[in-house]
Image 1 (spheres, rainbow, N blue to C red):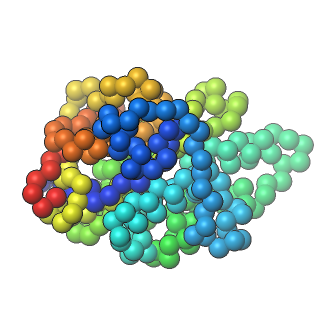
Image 2 (tube, rainbow, N blue to C red):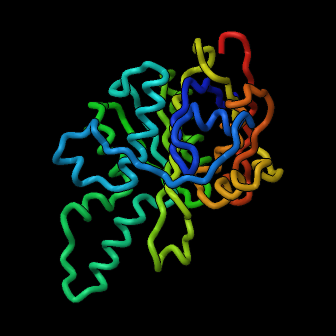
Length: 268
């Protein structure tokens, strides 16, 4: 089979000290230092007020990064199929449900229940944007970024149209945080388009490797990459920020690595 290929048309990002792609690009290119800062999740103003009140961190995070990526590319998000990938979904909501089930009164709020499904952010995305194209919601534990990217690239190949890929993770409160210590919210959106698309940031081709995954040179950024599954894509984002061609290896399942070849050919 031919190598899976696509263009990266735009990026959205939100994480500790990385509030948007322009800021993150300067940090990842080495033009500005990374400064620790809490993640400020914006209000999901694209949602109707009734749905807005029911949202948690996962929905606010995915809407923020997805809308940044689509706005940057000046593309209508309602037209896009999308792939959502997370290692655990909404950690706070999961905690609240477990807390209710462990109490004397084990009745669950309907809002807690419908927010507990793994595709809840994809559903809210459809409400906020009017998107009716198919969405997939994946989970592959620490390999969730790589699994989601692979799925999105397959869709670009098969459907020959742009696909929005959103990887995200949220933190768990204690006591679950002691066994799943994701320290903060982190989300990234990549708008992927068929090869040869004009105005793209870069072209990527996917292969496989057993060599170690790439790490970040700066210790604080490496801590983010290694502690938050959705941040496993930081080495790829660093290449985009620097405009640098070359290979990027990202963790996948069972010791395998996704090997991306990044290029910036004319027309990309």
